[in-house]
Length: 153
Image (tube, rainbow, N blue to C red; front, side, top):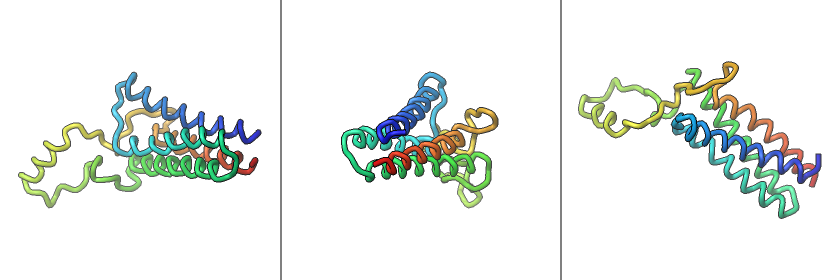
């Protein structure tokens, strides 16, 4: 696989995953949670990095593409763990502990967070793997392709 082809596949893979996420949101009506939104940014960065890497030689940009893919893969793995209740998620999008809150504080939080999509709920899964899990798996594969692109320089 040439450097150019590897960059096209890796950046195109991030573009496809990003397009899929937007399709689930817009066409499927699945609103993203906080962690879902965080996973989108590295894909957007990888697409931009891919465009630049096609124009500029060197290993730096493919290396940055690999870091972007690894970061979204790590976020996806963390999110999948939150969904499986393996560890707690951010308080902004999981149930959290309300034992120390007064009735007024609880009411304020409820009113402020009426449209929060829960990060610990699986909205969609394929073969028992959630979207976050698939993002982790596929993005790890994209990181390997970015590594191939860096080594072809």
